[in-house]
Length: 110
Image 1 (cartoon, helix red, strand yellow):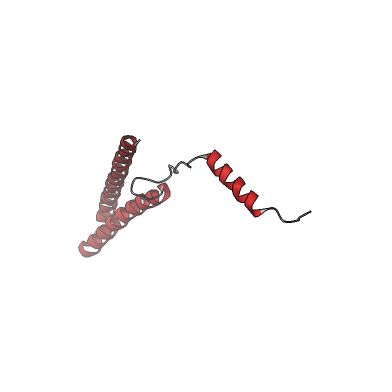
Image 2 (image 1 turned 30 degrees about the vertical axis):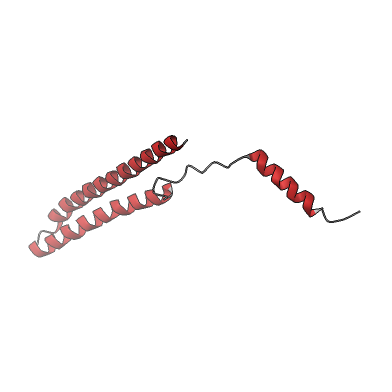
């Protein structure tokens, strides 16, 4: 009795298993650009945070120059938040358009 399995029989078995499984389907967790959904979400969070920080920086800078500390800081914080949300929504729209175009191209191919 052999303690090692026959390598030829194992290769033949692997080929039969692969043939039975068929062609593997691609994962749907990738967006049209090739980025994962987590990477797109991280990009959106960065865009929102950047908008807020730029607004706070501009507001604080104007308040220090003019001498009215809370006024421009509050106004530009809200403006920065609105700009961040607008940029975030634009990114979401782009990702959705690319995904739709990729699905349409895939349907045409099939």
